[in-house]
Image (tube, rainbow, N blue to C red; front, side, top):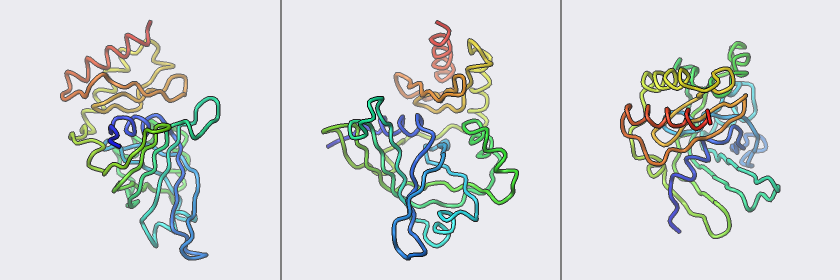
Length: 221
């Protein structure tokens, strides 16, 4: 079944935690699942912050291949009726690139205390394939290239758009913009994550500013 890439893309931006499955070193070969927070980078790839002492970090040192599961459980707790996305790929070292640090901390400001410890660094999932399930009868496989064929926003452009939105936000103390891409905006409203999907892909900065201004106006109503 053909699945639109917009649904899994927005799901990745809505959620803040996922389940990481690595290949266990001991006992060898067993799947080793763990839950941890994540954020997406400008190319919608999951980014995790891991300690070099963590078991899953050691597993990734031996074998970068991994699965990553993101679930949006409905309010009735019927997980089988909710959206699920399983991503397959390799978690590559992301180091402590300043742009990546700034972006991650906008989504997870509490992570600053882990970065201060000195043994944490980022890993970025280089997606190869993904399987999306949107409910009964709505499921399918997608390749990584299908997720977003457009060029990602440059860090400077995203920073300028965030400043633009924060100047127009109805209540800057409660409403903040964590990230923006050509398909939507990731809001933090009183600390809670909200994905605001645009009506269409925005191909230039002017269109993005207009979309963010409309988003701010909607929040003010």
